[in-house]
Amino acid sequence: MANTTSPDAELLALGRQLAVEWARMDSWDAANPHASDEEVNASLEPGWRLIDRIEHMEARTFEGLLVKAQAISWCNSGEEIDPDRFCPYPGAATDGRIAASIVRDLLRRA
Image (cartoon, rainbow, N blue to C red):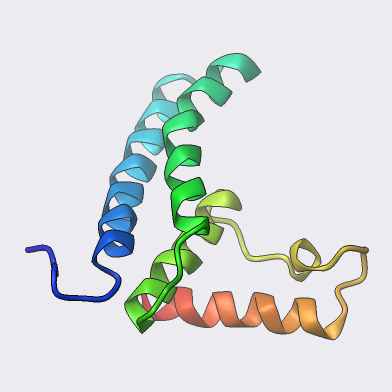
């Protein structure tokens, strides 16, 4: 049941949609191992639209922050969060390592 009283109700709904989209994408990938880049990009488009909406919303609750962490994970194809993704230059400065650590901590609680 959706929590419509949460200050993050819309963000939480987008998170549920992203989970459905992620499962759809996993199934699509398994069924299309030799897809072209164009086909893969087209199949990713619905997820990217969700990510764009999630990115531009403010998280007001811990659960909303979890949705944002899951969106980062989706952007990384579920792989380990690389601290270099948070830094403008290679070599992960302290702030990049901390940002990646925060995302990993949130994902462990999701």
